[in-house]
Structure formats: C-alpha cells, structure tokens
Image (cartoon, rainbow, N blue to C red; front, side, top):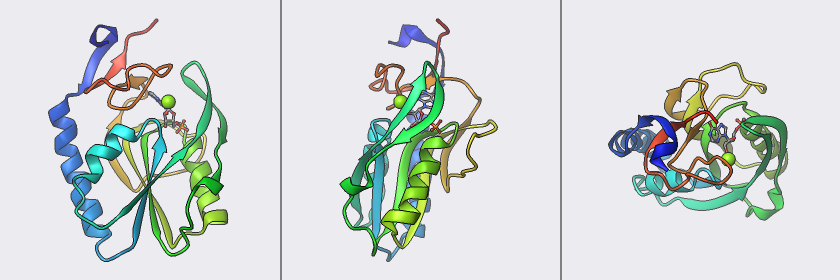
Length: 176
Ligand code: IMP
Ligand code: MG
C-alpha cells in the first residue's frame, strides 16, 4: 500500500500530537454538557477511536452511515442518509466527526437535516482534514485537524475505492 503513495503528508506521530490538541479543545468546550458524538461512517472510524479515547468526558457515541455519490475522485453532490437511525437527540449537544471536508456536500446535508429534523440542543463539527479550496456548499467545521492542499489523500480511515483505510499514515495517492 505504501508503494501506491506519491508522498506522505502526516506520519503517525504527527497525527497523534494533533489529536491531543483537538481533544483538549473539545474537552474544554463540552465540560458539563450532554455530548453525543456522531461519527460519519466509514471514513471517520479510525479518527473517532483515537480522538474519543483522549476526551475524558461522559459522552455518548453514535454512527451515521452516509452515501455520497462519487464519480472517480469528485463528489456528485448527492448525499443520502436516514436520520431515523439516530436516537432521540433533542436534549443533547451533537458533535459530528468526519474524516475530511472537501466539497462540503456531506457536512452541509447532515447539518441541515440535524437542525430541521433531529433538533439537538446544538450541532458542531470536527474534521481531521480540511481541503483548502472553494466549496460547493458554504460550510465550516468548528474543529479542524489539518489544512491540506486540494489533493486526493488516503490512509488513517480515508479510502480510494474502499482501499487504504488501514494505512497508519495519511498520504497523497500516486496518479493513475
Ligand atoms: P464532501 O462531501 O465533498 O465534503 O466530501 C466528504 C467525503 O468525501 C469524505 O467523508 C470522504 O469520504 C470523501 N473524500 C473527499 N475527499 C477525499 C480524499 O481526498 N480522499 C478520500 N476521500 C475523500
Ligand atoms: Mg470515502
């Protein structure tokens, strides 16, 4: 798998150090609040597991399976998921976790549905990576691990055709 990378952007140690920082921000902000973290599957699984073990709060965890339709490496803008799979969150503060903020379609669609249908006390979001680019939907993440160039990356949960999720580093996939 490493041979398919053009370059490594973040080694394991760098990711771990950044997670320490993110976790202490989140821990400070959600002190005393009823927090439910919602991990967007599958990309945020590894990020979620490593991040949440650094947050010493009595939080709850849920997962949301979302399909965003891709043609190759580009989002088509179609995002579907079923909010009915979520528990009642009306008395909870929700923190959405995703692997990467790219076009913004995924996060924008989930935040919209949260606010209009699920109606938790608050909705914020945390992404491990944020691509620096013009987004199709105006959406900002409240917590960001790393800003990266607009390149297709894999590893640490991120896939290309469901491959490379179990790489422990984050890297740019070689063209072809
Ligand atoms: P968005 O809806 O375009 O913001 O993209 C969000 C989803 O697209 C992420 O949760 C990823 O699953 C996928 N994605 C976007 N960019 C990349 C990338 O560079 N590598 C792997 N997956 C990506
Ligand atoms: Mg994906």
